[in-house]
Image 1 (spheres, one colour):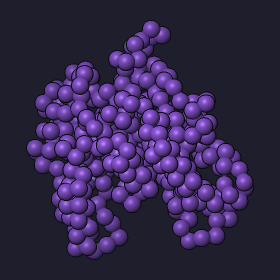
Image 2 (cartoon, rainbow, N blue to C red):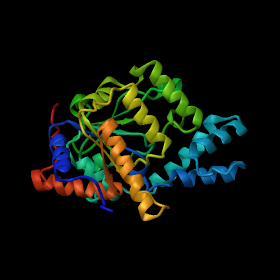
Image 3 (cartoon, helix red, strand yellow):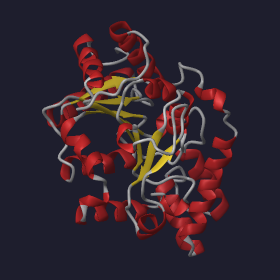
Length: 315
């Protein structure tokens, strides 16, 4: 079974669209899995702490929902999860992102105008900072707490940051599911996912317009998601139904090959997913880790453009 399903033409298209400002990375939990506790580990810890009685103890939204109901305190559960993330992120030094082979740093060194993410962590911001690139950070205003207290641009400094920096010229990091710094902004429980979907269905403007335009005007690189992950399914549904994902442009989903099955079954699953999503949504697959993909992307980029650093194209 090939390591990935992208051919040279696919890679040439990705590199060309990055250089033309027509490509946007969309980061999921797999991007940070080498640094942070996984959703499964968090779910199991919550399940143990709150006496979760069902079999699916690795399902974080469901376990978090149970804990929030039993304790009658959603903010408390979010704060517990946020603390675990913060403890892990605080232990990571700035030097981690000085490594130019780090997946986040590779993306930070490329001239993307926007970085979209459903992760709570600040790793792409820290990677941009390590690269000397200030950025604008914003959150999706999906609930009242986020709208009231959190949403709105914040400039995060890199080597070139200054109070007078025009935010329109800076790359945007946009967190759709909140950030650990503000636990109430986090999309965590099953009810949160339903509320998130409902809010966007009722008012797509809760996602800022320049982010909505990404799906219509850019090729999207989905990095760190699993097709079985509720986060990926929710985001893809929104992209298709509310944000008019452009099916004329090729998009890329980086996926780990199916495991736990025979080679024949795994290959059949892989071929089905490739055929279905390429046919219906024009999605190509890279079968491997986010690290595998970003390393290959950097190699392809340097081959064409050298290593001169970022110059963001204006679409």
